[in-house]
Amino acid sequence: MKIEMFDTLDAVLRGGSLAAAASEMNLTPSAVSMQMKQIEAWLGQPLFDRSGHAIRPSPLAHEVSGAMREGLEHLRSLRRRSAVVVEGVVRLGIIESMLPVLLPGTLTELRTRYPRLELRPTGGRSTGLTDAVKSGELDAAVVAEPPGGGSARLLWRPLLRSEMCLIVPPNATETSVAVLFKEYEWIRYDRNTISGMLGARYVTSQVRTGHGALELDSIQAIVAMVSAGLGIALVHLVEAGFCQSYPVRFVRLGRSAPAVQLSLVSRKADGESRPLRAVSEAVTTALAVALRQRGLAGR
Image (cartoon, rainbow, N blue to C red; front, side):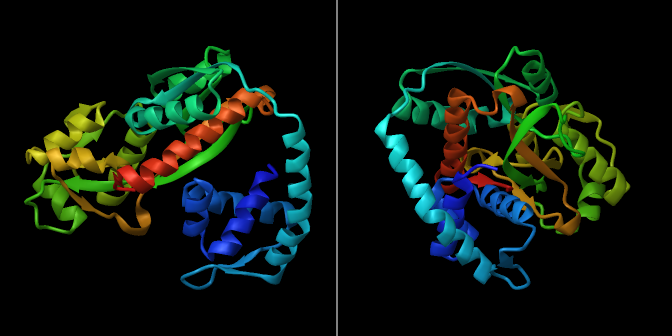
């Protein structure tokens, strides 16, 4: 457990919500929620009452925050006495669908805060990038975590849990998922990817109809096809700006909707690497900014 989580707890208490803390800490709400659950797991007690629409902090939450605040400030003062220069090379993989979302912001953040740290990015699919981290070809990668959990040999830092939804042509008025699958061809996302597999599993178990004859490995191509009225598709995290050029309508799938867990994976032996921690911070910041400012549809 990282001590920075207690800074996040402080932010939750100040802002009164996970969303407010996410904005202050440059994190995603799901990352804030995950950090709070990790603190609770470590304490063995809940910090919040989650029975209502909004979370309510318990007295224990304020007690923990107060106990840690002075110690954290003292640690920061010790760290400031001897600033450490972060430098070196980090080979980072990013799944293709997230490259335009994460890479510009991550590079900007690193060049501003750590100018002597060189990032060497590469794109790919989750399985291939994860294997490259295992073999040492990559230092870390942003991937979709396998539904049953990632390899215990690796270190997984959760970034965002993204719910999949159905995109349909802009002039489609039907709201029933079952009817839409009967009226339109299902355009599959590559079944060799985690999200493609999750989408196929949902259709098999929930819709029980539809045959995806057309299968593509590009989210942008799928959105363009759906916008042209050539079918419907299950996707997650589509850039809102792209949908202005290729308009589609989003249909939520409800409680049974599959979700993709995006995580930063690295080797456990590199868990305390300063360059990797700097990259992790930059990726988290870039994702938070993208969600807040650029706009991602279908989250």
